Image (cartoon, rainbow, N blue to C red):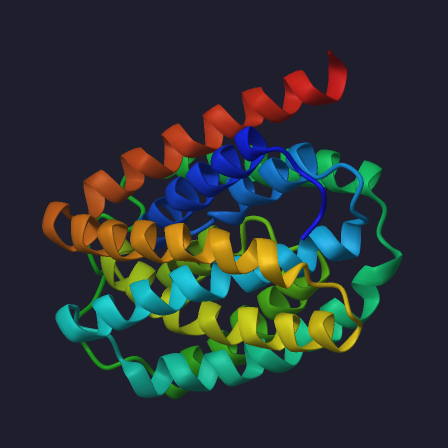
Amino acid sequence: MPDISLTTLVLLCLAALVAGWIDAVVGGGGLLLLPALLLGIPQAGAAQILGTNKAVAIVGTTGAAVTYVRKAPVQVRTAVRIGLAALAGSMAGAFFAAGISNDVLRPVIMVVLVGVAAFVMLRPSFGTQAETKAPVGRARVVTAIVVVGGGIGFYDGLFGPGTGTFLVLALTAVLHLDLVTASATAKIVNVCTNAGALAMFAYQGSVLWQLAAVMAVFNLAGGMVGARMALSKGAEFVRGVLLFVVFSLVAKLAFDQWS
């Protein structure tokens, strides 16, 4: 584990707890966890930060996915198909991630966040309810596998932050799911993207395992609590949390970038 103070470790664990909750509700816990790691262990390289983020996130995402599968109407077979494509995409993205510098990460995250906020605000009814209860057509499933799985999976391996949020939005748009069901489906896919990227980062020796193990415990707790809250409170709650998280993180990253 890198040489960090007890205060920093406690703050990183709290960030992992909140990130797990956010990730379970709306996805995108990495948008909190990744900046926290960048600030907490500035001596680490970008690849180590990305790899450690994946090692932490996969634990909380798995816990949330299990909770959702047990209690939400998830089409597990479709989710697994998309997830396998996402796993391959994330491994490919992680392969190219070693050359990314820390200076690139912050502005990329900011642009991503602003785009997500604009989309959700311009579509106030987006994901508040499923557009259709009919079985999803083959063409939409194929589109979800290729575009959502492969494309977002590649992004997850290359950068990572916001992947869960993008999955929720894309699954809602392509498969016409409500936000709660999309969040549940996204968790299964996100487990696969995390696994693919983590495998590549581990192979490259870019994971701080001791730090990740400590933070993962808190991320798991946050993920399981967040999944239960999303299921009980519904799509409007998920949408509200999504907008709050996005605007808060944009403000924080903008301050860090230009202060």
